[in-house]
Image (cartoon, rainbow, N blue to C red; front, side, top):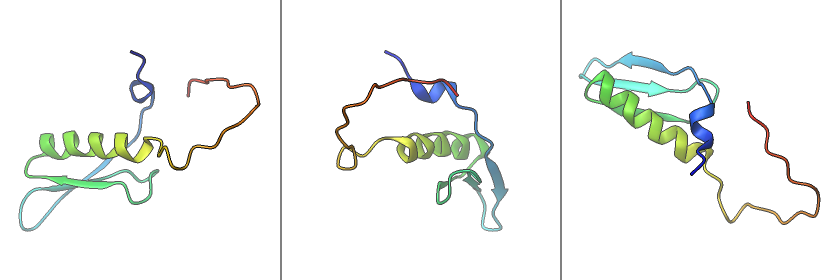
Amino acid sequence: MFCLFSLIKLAIVLEPQEEGGFTAYVPSLPGCISEGDTKEEAIKNIKEAIELYLEADTNELVEFTGEKIIVTI
């Protein structure tokens, strides 16, 4: 199965929190934020958040008659 997400590289920001743990966010994806008790958990969680952020909402898909071309970025 082809996975689009493995082709995209995004910068994430990890910020330690005073109460413990880390907040992770993606500056290029507004509102894409997550957290974790450790850096590793925060990174795992932000990866999932990115996938959900980029996932197509079937309610927003529009039928089109033009040629469909897939490009790699």
